[in-house]
Amino acid sequence: MRDLGHEQVVFCNDAPTGLKAIIAIHNTVLGPGMGGTRFWNYATDEDAITDVLRLSRGMTYKNAIAGLNAGGGKAVIIGSPNIKSEALLRRFGRFIDSLAGRYVTAEDVGMCAHDMEYIGMETSFVTGLPEVRGGGGDPSPVTAYGVYMGIKAAAKKTYGSDDLSGKIIFVQGVGHVGGQLVKLLVKENTKVLISDINEERVLKVAKTYDTEVVDPLNRLDFEMDIYAPCGLGATLNSESIPGLRCQIIAGGANNQLEDEELHAHMLQARGIVYAPDFLINSGGITNVYMEYKGNYNRELAYQKTEDIYQTCLDLITRAEIEGVTTHQAALQMAKDRITAMEKVKLSFKVH
Ligand code: NAD
Image 1 (cartoon, rainbow, N blue to C red):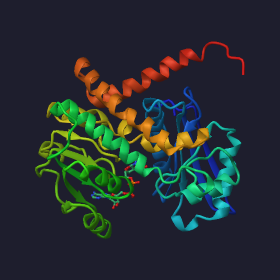
Image 2: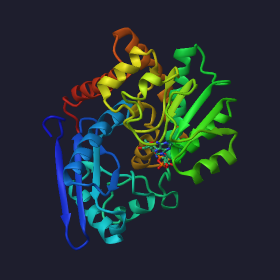
Image 3: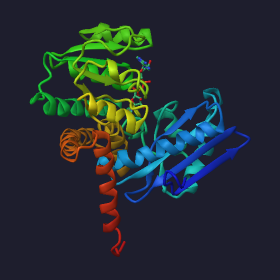
């Protein structure tokens, strides 16, 4: 906690329901720690602790750079998905409630909007509810829209225009986010290459949109202009980067750089423009944040997500001027906002 700067970490245990969970609150300067709950069968408790600490820290910077008044938080529930039950989720909801609003949850890997309904029966500190319950529903289309904005901003910096027609764009992973991204890209007369380790998924997308399927086990060293990782993280590493033949990397996956420092520098040295993942995939958190604030309006969520275009342009320029990587520039931009808002909060406010 000291090393990564966490404020609070809570361990939750409930034998009758089998609940074992950890809630990590990294930083609440901007607002309540906000971030999803991951349901995952971790090999060890140590792995779960490491994951929740890293993920909650990541949320601090994602929420800050997205301009949200939310801090960083995240939770993990440890166990195989077959232990998931109404009772377990509601018990977890009570633990969240005991934090009195310092942490607000939403869905992440292994959780869905329906699970948020159960949590919501025990606490109001939950968002990402189904549309039929007055929530914002699946946030992935908004995430994909933000990624699309990031791609366009990176193209503007690289090619002098954000017109993507004729560009070869590789979308790796066509799940919730990747599938929606393909839908946006094909409208611009781009040549879209797709891959997915789930054959059924890739065939479905290939049938719906004019795309070309690439073997998911291929390396990344084939010809493309833009690489959009939308599967799992860490695809940018010491093995893949030397072979890349693209000019831009901009995708929705979290934690694309295996080593944030080393691999951002390797991309910079190769002259490849990297649009930081935690900025351009922030549309989803913006969507659930706006739901949490009340009077949810999907159009407004899209409007706010559109800001990613300008922020991305600004940070690529800042990185050039300061001679740092785009990842460093994005982190600094997020930290600057937190520092500035810390000062705002120093003055007395009558509630
Ligand atoms: P998803 O599970 O719906 O889709 C991911 C897809 O990637 C799956 O179809 C999977 O088979 C495929 N995949 C995994 N590894 C692959 C590989 N090596 N090659 C090709 N395909 C591969 O998940 P999602 O909701 O679309 O999220 C995708 C990524 O975006 C994740 O990293 C997630 O953390 C991140 N993200 C998602 C959201 C959101 O709103 N859903 C928001 C922010 C970040």
